[in-house]
Length: 312
Image 1 (cartoon, rainbow, N blue to C red):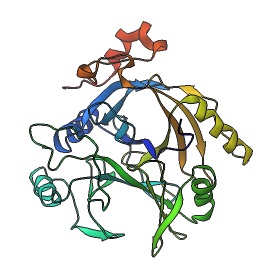
Image 2 (cartoon, rainbow, N blue to C red; image 1 turned 90 degrees about the horizontal axis):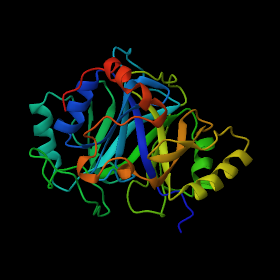
Image 3 (tube, one colour; image 1 turned 180 degrees about the horizontal axis):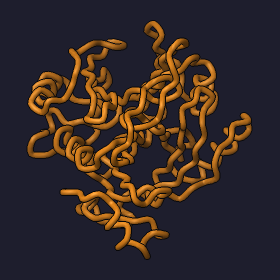
């Protein structure tokens, strides 16, 4: 059994209008809605999970779409970019698609020898598509409009913006098992060899930048992957021994979670592979039905009335 951090599990961000969020990620980016549930702490708000067919860890982007939320501000102390891996030769097609759907994007650029295309979603969240140097053989989810030749394969990396990188780097290297792979200016690339994909974290050192404000169009937290909750609790002890406050294990129905805020201010989660997204829906029906945490099932009617209407 692999006792290591296995790269990224999921990333969670904040959106505004639920329908707009659903339409962009399923119809423009071509992701699958893997799970439609609610925020555990605010059941009047959806929690959307987008990923590949099965919701494989390392492909899952989740959202809390709070209707009418104010615009947030990207800055230090948060993840400020989410990068998906895409097939070689696909970026021109994505530029054409973004033009067609009026998605703001920049010209392609290069980072650590890899070409990427940055863009923003309707809430202003920063994303990019990147052609990785290393082969990425993950099975993609396709739609009528987004075919295999261009479809996203899952996460390549995420960027954390920090006033100073050293304390966060120590968490990545000393606890999570990452190593410094390369540096370009004030960008430091860390990688874990425990897995071949979704295994890169970039730390961007911005000592003079304002701290970010969590609201619409910003990332809420970054979740790292472990195989199961036994291994997860070993990391609980390692993190607590460093004097960092970490939550007890929390059952999120589809995985177990621990949360702690690393020294640079980014909220980290450690999430398990088990039990997975088919625990309450068959694979073919993932995302088709509103699934509620057990404690809210008795008030389903009231919650369904409160949630925004959504055309799937």
